[in-house]
Length: 263
Image (cartoon, rainbow, N blue to C red):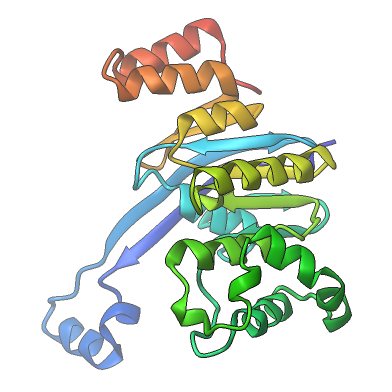
């Protein structure tokens, strides 16, 4: 049984309507017959399903529709067309360095972030040492948060957020935080969560990272679903496309010919 089903999901943005220009300007333009609305489809007819324990990598250039699709899957947005069916709890680790107060200490911000994520005070008391040590910020815990580097802030955010154990976990570029050593540690932490049976959706510009971690891949291009299938095969083909070895049309032809898509 699928834990997540995305069926024919399309997301449309409207530009030029009264929500953008205000009601007064909208009325004036209507009276002058100078009112225009433009449609932009961020995603068009996206369809796939995931089973418990799957790890899906979503690949595609900037503007492919990845972040918009994640918002719909996580329930932040409603699709213009289509539907999303979810089973169990869902958590999204995005915007890693947001939601902190620069004037509070690192320790105080850890508790603040935990509260935002719904953790109890008792839970934070029990896990604080684990959080601060994983983030490698023990010697900075009583300093103002604003004195930390951007990498340190992201390490703290990842350390706190990685405590979640949902049924579906969404990761948007979160494994790009910190230096090389911390990236390896955070990658290992994510593997631990996934091995616990969590179904995971992972967005990354690192094709190598997607190929290494994921068993399935969704390839998007300007809102269009190019393919949904085996991670190793599609990552290899996507790499060829990025390197100019094959065109998008050739990739589509090969995918259809070799039946690389999952139903």
